[in-house]
Length: 263
Image (cartoon, rainbow, N blue to C red; front, side, top):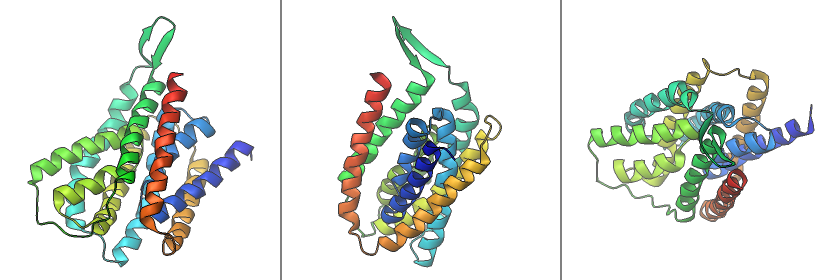
């Protein structure tokens, strides 16, 4: 086993621990890890990330269901439009992206560069959401018409499909603001949406990509073990401070990706 592969597996475990501690957010590190540490193409990295996120989210759903922190009815109202968008973006849109978007002099704006920069800007949004997050656990009475949820689900599903992350940093605010769920229940419910979307999105890649199943299954298993460890540790670690600190780390990472891709 090569050194890079060992580093990748250790990082998979750490990503799982972060997911277990925060209830989400850690998966956003999977794509940069696969691209910059393990040398995968961004298209393959985002596909692998969807599988890792989907399998680890299933473990999270089981945990939250036992705690009574999942609203299945609201979750599945988001799932239908989201998984359509995720599947279509992975099956048809990503493979249709040109290898080079445009060229200016010696500068070539490639497909890989475009995907990673899009990913970096979503990371920026995620970082600010984590830094400014308020853990309100009050349920609001405001309910949004389903057609608005449908539009929201399509938009978030498209972003999830393009970047290969779970999208919890987008679904949780949507569930709080649009569906009136308290924060803790919104986090649990978002895991249902993330699990279904990610695995269906990954199925869209199966026809387009050659999957290294041994690597992917070991990576996913280590992430799952990390989730279980993080879940145990979360009882002893203050979630709010940890989330803010991780938000600042994601902020730095997003600027690193922008610097790496453009300079």
